[in-house]
Image (cartoon, rainbow, N blue to C red):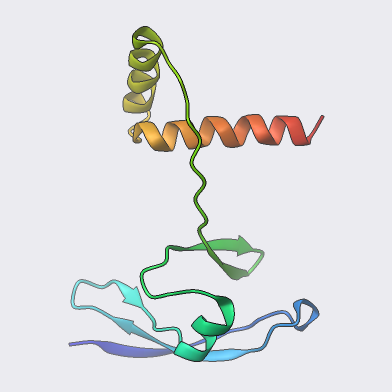
Amino acid sequence: MLHPYLYNFNFDPRLSMNQYELKLKETPDGDLFFNIPDDILERLGWEEGDEIKFVEKGDDFLLKKVKYESIELEFDDEELLKYMQCAHEQNITFNEFCELAIKAKLNAIDSE
């Protein structure tokens, strides 16, 4: 049985956003979820199944659609094994390891 909770999503008017009230529901396993109305999805260009991430902004959360870009990386077998072992040691996937490394490099470049 799902248990509904009301939750306010407050959008900052300085960002030309509106305030919406959505109903949070709880699965029998204790996971919470909500549905975003179709008109909002359409306006945002989002579709059912899109991956959305929550970005913490102080006491609030910003919902952002995850956008993927493909980057081709070339490693020789020795480098690949080394990087895969590093990912394993951090208990993350190789793709997550590469993403973290690329983000760190981009952040370093941005702060130069």
